[in-house]
Image 1 (cartoon, rainbow, N blue to C red):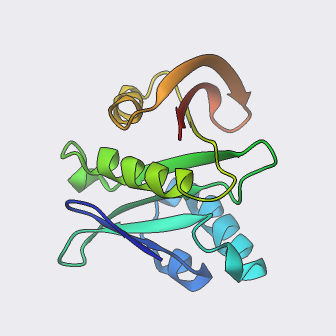
Image 2 (tube, one colour; image 1 turned 90 degrees about the vertical axis):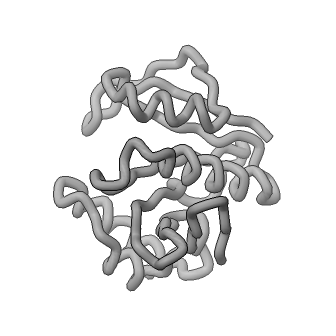
Length: 153
């Protein structure tokens, strides 16, 4: 599966590709988790991790979902851009492309992003990509307090 944007190409990754992806060392456990999920269910490709590259094939980051949508029609999205590519609009394009793909899938009604209130850059990316704050606040044992943003189809 490939999704093309103005500057980025997103490719839905298989387990081995997730393992080869450049990853923040602090989140290596997440990389293993996603690869394991894809190894257990190879047909879930697209519902987990997408690699983002420029036209020349240079990897700029990745993003994806937390698995297939639930009965409530929700997907949770996450995204990250390598430090040297930040501040250039790549995160916004990545999130827009993921949201458009996700909302185009049968049974998906809403895409949710859960963002730390101190991560102003990620909040701005979500807002630019058409996500609105719901006013909902969650607590995550790993990430602390999170704000919820949504984009509906």
